[in-house]
Length: 135
Image (cartoon, rainbow, N blue to C red; front, side):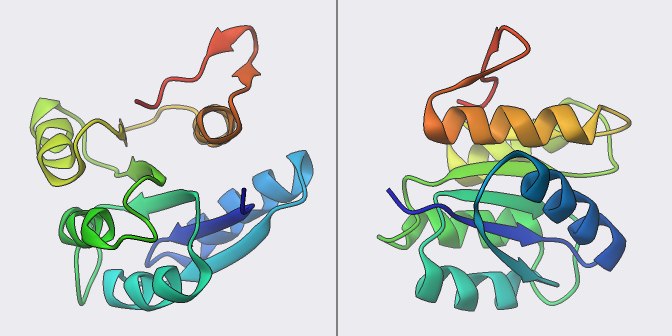
């Protein structure tokens, strides 16, 4: 299984925060993209098994990028963790519609915990005794 992880966010600080967290817990092949279009190009080459994907981005938003990732054979089975500052059922509904069951993370939830949950889902591990939350 590939250990490639794609981190997609238009905020460089958020990308770095997630990357640093992942570097602390494992030996992953990390790739970063600043928007949905760039994410699709990188995903086609690197075939990540885990994607952290911001919803609100320029060029191509995360919801549409997620739809397209699900239609690429190489990423159709990837764990996708949708990240957004927005809170509410509507964001989760849009993420679910785009990708089928996935993780939709909004508001002020602990990003470090979410990173571990996404990793746990991908490699079949648990975080803090809790089963992975991504479906």
